[in-house]
Structures are given as structure tokens and as C-alpha cells.
Length: 290
Figure 1: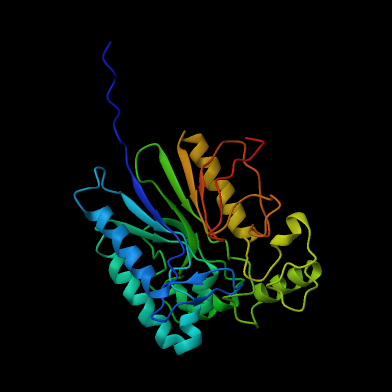
Figure 2: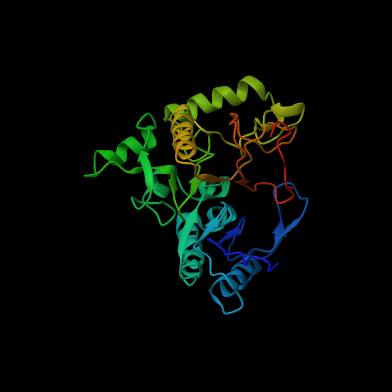
């Protein structure tokens, strides 16, 4: 009996934590490893050559960048000018792939740019995907609306790369103290939530926190009620249409005893693959209830 030839419906590329900066190597925030800032760009170029070259048998339908596209050190050494230059360098490399590029937002994006700045930057999805209007309760964005003819889209969206599949790109820093202006109600609510659980003077420290509470640190974030309602609706519609779902975001959607997790989470009855990376030491995780 002849083996049935399998057909690749589509493929996609994934890359995370590029954290490029035109700067010399230096230890990371926790002093646990060395950041090779300039070499990060060389690794991206290597990935781009693979995705766009003849050695890639199935050219990717899209590539997704899972956050921290440039390092926050850019803003420290040269301010917004240095951040913008670094972002342009990396974006220019992505443009050589020859397919759609998607960006999730990580903490380093917000170390370099405000949420309002990102909304109008190359990291914004624009209006080419199935998204929803931005949550106007965030005053960081509402200021843009008064100067724009069209309400900007939310930073989370979904698209179908192939019949029978649905890809969902989340904003896991929707609720966070970083990226939002201090006058924004989202910032203030996020800060109250953090301080109600994390009693450290430095909110990036998880010292004294146990189990799932270790996720309540400032470099993490979460999804607000509007995004969660939107996500449940997208998943329900995909289920009704018998679509397989793939979720992308910066952080895991699990409440395991790890530092890196969303500050809120939900449970869905169907098995859904989730691509997320935040600590650079993450391992594949399977929900025991699946």
C-alpha cells in the first residue's frame, strides 16, 4: 500500500527576543547572562536568509516576532532617537523576508516607546486584519482619536492564513504599568493591583511572593476585560466554524508556579497551541487539564 503524500497547508516563522541595540555587550538586568546586542541583528539576518532562501522548502506564509524586538537599553543610551534608529534597522531586515510580518508587544517595546507611539508605528497591525476598535478607556490612546479621522484599531487581532485555521495575536501588556502614561486610568489600576500583592519597593522584584503570585511584577502585564471578551468571542466563532486556532503573545496563558505569566488568565475547553516567550529559559508547557 502506497504511503499517502502529506501536503503542507502553510508554514510560518517564529522569532523572539531579538533585543537589538547598537551597543557593546553587557550583563542583563539580573546579571545572570550577557546581552550580545549587535550580534542579535546577525542572528535575525540568518533567520531572514533561511525564510527567504532556496533552502526553505516551504516558504512561510507569515513570520511572527514575539516581542522585545529591540532592547530597552536603546532608550537609556540615546533616548527616543536611538530607539527609533534601532527599530528601523530591525524592521528593514524583516522586510527582506517577502511575506507578512506580525509583531507582538513585549516589555522592551514599552521601555522604548509609549503605547500611543506604538499605535502609530511600524509595530502596529494597522487595519489589514480582523480586529476591533481600541479600548477608549485608555487615555493614552483617546488623545489620538481626537486628531484622527478614524479610530485606531486595537493592538490585538486575528487572521486566517489558510482555510480552516485562525491565528490570534494578543496584547499581553494591555493591562500594565509600563507603556501607559501615569495619568492613564489603566496605569493607575495596574499599579494598585501590583501593590496589593507585591510589597517590594522595587516592583520588578518577586522576592517574598509565592506560587502564582510571582507573576505580579512590573515587567509583566495582562489582558483587560475588553480584550478577554473579544478573545472569547473569536474562539467561540472559530469553534463554530470548525477552525483550528493558534495563539501568539508575549507571555504564557498559564498559572503555573513561574515568574512569567499574565496577571489574569482564562480556560478554554479546546486544545489550543500557544506561542509565547518571555524569560529566554522557557520550556514547552502542556496544561494538565487538556
